[in-house]
Length: 245
Length: 232
Figure 1: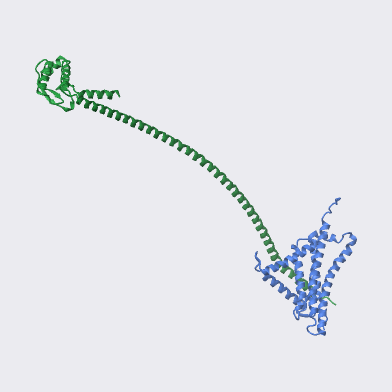
Figure 2 (figure 1 turned 180 degrees about the vertical axis):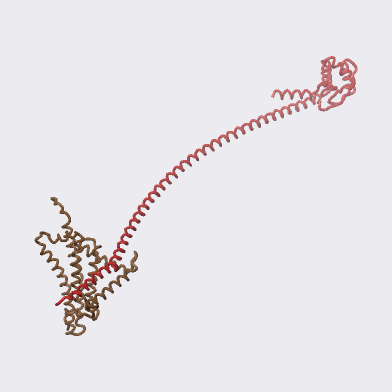
């Protein structure tokens, strides 16, 4: 048995070369790829852990935000309730004032209406009283009444100042003598005589009729009017009633 | 029948005789290198089936190195893995008709053992320096230097003899049976020879790891200061 040292050397070199080549083309690339993938897996796990922690942080942030939302909503509800209560109170006060104003206006209107009504009733009552008195006085018209009114007129003329009677008597225009009904010629002559006597001399008289007098005898000159009739008396009574009310 | 120990040169490259084992070794080298180069051409972070298979091979070699040597496999992966791959494919090349495995030749096994011997020295010196490595021969006492030196030679020689004996005997037995019996009779023996070849590749690589790990460990123990013992 012999050893071929040349072949041994060639084989040693061959195997050494094979070790280098396989290390260059197989063992190193594959092991580096394994290391890269392990690194990638570790990096991926680290990233996943980081993202998980980030997600946890985001979740916690969301939870805090939601808690803040609830707190803010509660505060907003409280504020809204407070505002609503204040607005309700303001509206109540406004409504109360409006109702009081309307009540005051109603009371004032009621007072005005009541005063107007009372005034109306008083006016009606006065008119009714005057009307009743006029009707009653109308039944008293006659010769006797006419003589009484004539005597009152004469008295009134005599009560006038002298200057007034002279001025009226010396006036160029005629003095109107107004009666409620047409006077008879005797009554006219009687009246002319008494009136002229009262003025102290001749005077021109113009007799005319005014039914509104009811009864009586009045004198009307340009600057003098002597009321002497039921109408004037009733008017005076009504004025007195109005003044008294 | 020719002697299995005789390996005539097929041709000469100048004065250098090229035997059958060298040619088969070249062929195995070509297959391994070209195959590795093509297989690792498109490695990606998302492996396919081929890449997954390649990574499984690498992971298996790494795990064997970790379990046997108790060190990180990076510096030893290429040497140990290539030894195993070459011996395994060389032993199984007998499946190809007319091909005689190069590990059945004494020179190839001697070359493999020589490389292991040199690797032990290289990794030992790398781990503890030249002084540390040489100092490992003086453990536990300088009196052991001759014995340790002889041991380093004999264990290398045992690698050579073990691999050569197993592979050569298989080839020899199959050749004898084939010459005596029919065509199909040697098939069980060939199957047994394949099993033997795989086992021998594993044993050779494992023993290489053990020798290297021993040298590395002893070199480090020699250079590193002894830790004081503390009572437990």
